[in-house]
Amino acid sequence: MAASKLGRGKARILVIDDDELVRSLFRKTPANLGHRVIAAETSPEGPELVKQEDFDMVFLDPKMPGMDGAELSCRIKTIKTKLRVTIITSYPESDMMVRALAQGPFGVMNKPFGAPDIVIAANVFIPITRARTAY
Image (cartoon, rainbow, N blue to C red; front, side, top):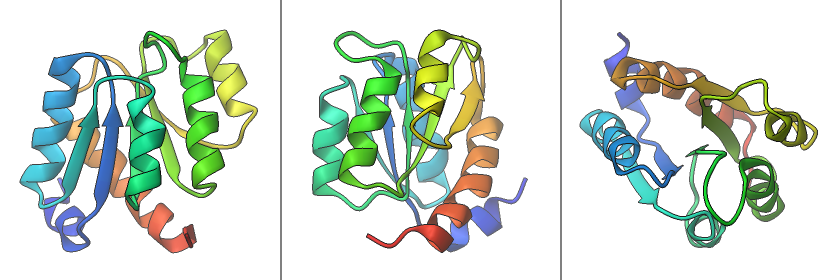
């Protein structure tokens, strides 16, 4: 797909997921296109990394020990209100998703997904984030 389009503007992407296979897929796919990817294994790591870095977007798993996706998204949005969050889930109709949506718009990627889905999401969300985000 539009790898050259995505590769033009190098993005900083954070992925928060307790599944090593998911983190690995996210580390490899955008990185192969020239983006910088940081992966967090636990929910509490996510907000700490957002405090330290200017990310263009965040992908997060809503079902992790310690903090669900709605709370995690809320904490991230408290730190950087315009940071684009995409929730990667097998449960798009869950109560947690309803609570997350109440905090504002976000993207959703349904599991299972593959490398092409990550490229598509980044193609859609990174340009929007860059156009609207002023930290």
